[in-house]
Length: 336
Image (cartoon, rainbow, N blue to C red; front, side, top):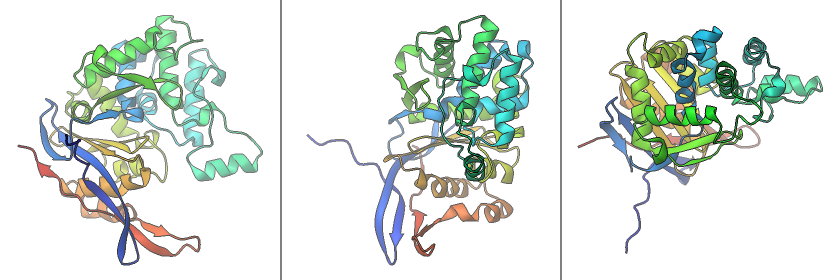
């Protein structure tokens, strides 16, 4: 019996005149009704959302009434949706939100790792200060969970338990966002200890399209506007997500996820895009995303100039010499 077909090659890694290795994966472009319009590979492949779930998780802060009750505005909503770099402006906002909730950073159960923003990590090390949960890339998401707990009067000690009411509310919100029932979503544990979800690639793209197409003033529309207004809270300085949003202001929400996931909400036309690199290698993401935006006609000449370094990144040896390149080789196909 023949097994499933291999995912198509999306990115080739060259060294000198030949291809040394490659990265396979899938891409789907969908509208808000879940109709795929462009694709590469298996668009029904089951994908662990990882951080691609963050905007859907943040949506619960709006739909529950917690944002209004606690005075959480656009910057806070964007922070809840982002994978943070641990920069000072992010850790300061997390700390301020926790103080508003009557909590300290010790309430965060996401664990600690060095900031993704290298200069910040270097400054911490030079000062002899260890990283804290405030520097975790998921600190915003965890702060949102704590906000929901405080608003509803739920206990915070075990807020990561999948059976905790905050996690049940989040599962319900994620399921609604991707058009599934909660019981249809396999649940696992993320790197930060929180529950994380699986869904078919096409469904995730539909969820991002729904954000792009959401009416102004609706919970999803309010969240999307907050995200568009605060691109530095979605990732941080020197990362593609923030830079592409700044290069194309008001038109795109870009979100990365661990293990080779990336999603886009495109406001023009209300489209969602999801990319999954099969081997989980993050290095294949940036050139793939630039290629997708080029193929969809979304990059202005000015934006392309700003983002040029992501288009075909060089492979450097230890002498900092370019010895090869990452080059995207896929073409988006129209869906039948």
